Length: 135
Image 1 (cartoon, rainbow, N blue to C red):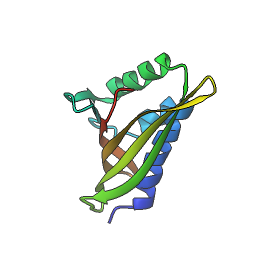
Image 2 (cartoon, rainbow, N blue to C red):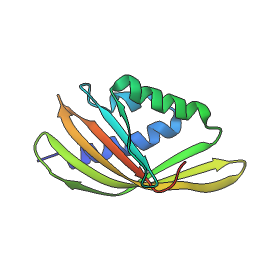
Image 3 (tube, one colour):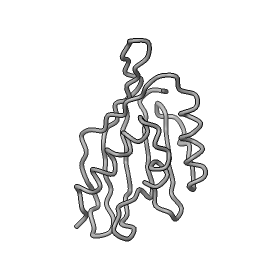
Image 4 (cartoon, rainbow, N blue to C red):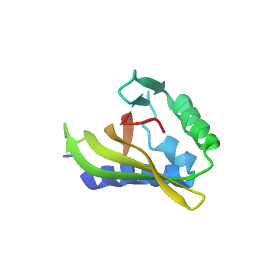
């Protein structure tokens, strides 16, 4: 059976890592072999970033453009397709921006994370994010 607490901590740490600019963790949270980050915005066509280099470019490019402080709130987490060495985690995202003394909800969405056991650690093999609005 999957270690749900370890997977929960991985996904929560991912949100905080983005908010504090921990790009090392953001790459290390993905499985080393063929990781994928796929995103759809407002029901549009999926955009896929395949491999660690492409995923790192996505994160660094987005961080470089932002002037605000982002807060990724991960909630309503539940698990599907649970096995000893893999699990699918589904959760909500509420994306908050703080800038110039104002707090703004930028978007919301749903993550579907296919996680696998790599050695003693849990990693994300494929992360799909369906955003309700552009950010």
